[in-house]
Image 1 (cartoon, rainbow, N blue to C red):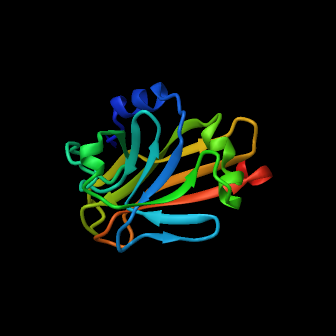
Image 2 (cartoon, helix red, strand yellow):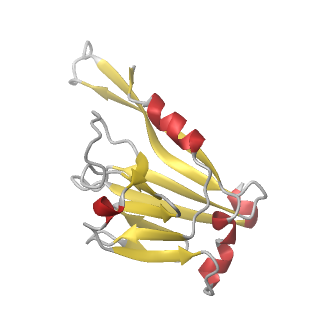
Length: 174
């Protein structure tokens, strides 16, 4: 098994104590916002530091990995100013989505999700098999069960890498 899980990513996520004020999606040709889901190239959670989650190397350039994991880091404003963003929700906002996401700005917890994919280097019976283990997502949830946001890094449709987000509210959030 080829383990692409980065220990620095795990400790980074464990160290974050969210106090977000705004959630923004990077505006690109692949941005799609639906009622309870979205897809984009990256998402930013703003507070004193901007917490960036992305899939492609355009957003997080100094990382090098052999696979398609979720990348997370604090991004300085000079990096973020290169891109245009759309605000999805704000702390204290008046929209219905802002009210549903109030928990996201109060008490969220963060958990990485993992994936294992297997590949063969041919069709012959003696072809070598490879397994890649990597972080493919992040679940941001309310410990009181009011909601959750599942971010998943996807490599479809190729060659574009997409970050999909899916909200769950109430009983669905567990």
